Image (cartoon, rainbow, N blue to C red):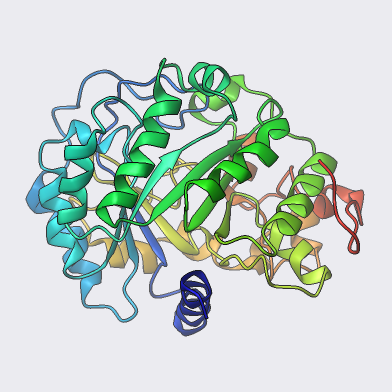
Length: 365
C-alpha cells in the first residue's frame, strides 16, 4: 500500500470513528484578513492591513487546547487572508502541531520563499496548501489579482517538497475556470501533491461578482472529477459540493472517496476576531470564542445543531432520498436564499434535474 493509499485508509477510519455532533473533523482559523492579493473570488474581502482586534497568540492556543484533548482531535487549519501577515504564525503552528494535526494556507506571494517554507516545516506542519486556479500564469495571476502568484505557488510547492512538507493544491471552480481543470489536475500530479481540494464557488464576498455553474454543469464537473481521480496519486476533496458523494455512490465506486463534512457538521470556522461560524462561506455567527469555548459553541449552538439535522432541511433537499449522504451545501443555500436550511440551488438532483450525469462510462468536461 503506497503512501496515499495509507492516507486514504486513515481518513476513512477517522471519519468512521468520529461523532460529528461532538467533534468536527476540521477547525479553520482565519488568522487575519490582511493579504497582498486581491483574488476575484475572495470570501474574506481581504484588506491590506491587519485588524487591531485580531485574536492574540494566547487566545489561539486556547482554541487548540480546547480540542487537543478530544480523541480523535480535529485538523487545525490556519488560513486567512494570508497567515504570513501575522508575525506569530510559525509560533502558533509549532505549538499546535504537538497536539493536533495542522495545516496552513499561505498566500502565494514573494513572501512565501524557501526560508519561510523551511520555518513552516520546522514548526511540524502536517500539510501546506497552495492555490492554483488556472492552468497558465497569465490567467491565474489575473484571477488572483497579483502578477507572479502562479509561479510563486509552484515554487512554494517545490520548496515544500524539499523541506518534506506534504502539499495540497486548492482550486476554485467557476464558469471561467472549469475549462482549465484537466490541465490543473495534471499540474497537481506533477507537483507531487497529496491532495487536490476543489472549491465549488459560493457567491459570498468578492465571489458574488463571478459566474458560477448551473446544476447540470455542476453534475458534469463532479462526474469528471470522480473519473479523474480514480487512479490518481493524490486524493480529491470537494468543498461546497456534497452532491459529489451522491454521484460516487450511484457509481458504486468510492475510489474518489471524500469525507462527509459540511458547514456545521464536521466543520467550524473561527474568524480573525474570534467570531464563530459554521463555515467561512456561511457568515451567520453562533457566538465568539472570547465569551464561550469553541467546543461548546460547536456542540450546542442552535444553528449548528440545526445544520446537523437533515430532517430540518426544506424544499427539494428536505425530500431528497440522498439527504443523509449529501445534505446539500448549507453555505450556498444561505448565500442564495438567506435560509441555511433551504435547498442547495447548485445540486443537480435537488434542482429537479434527476439523473443528469452518466453513472457508467467516462464523463467529459
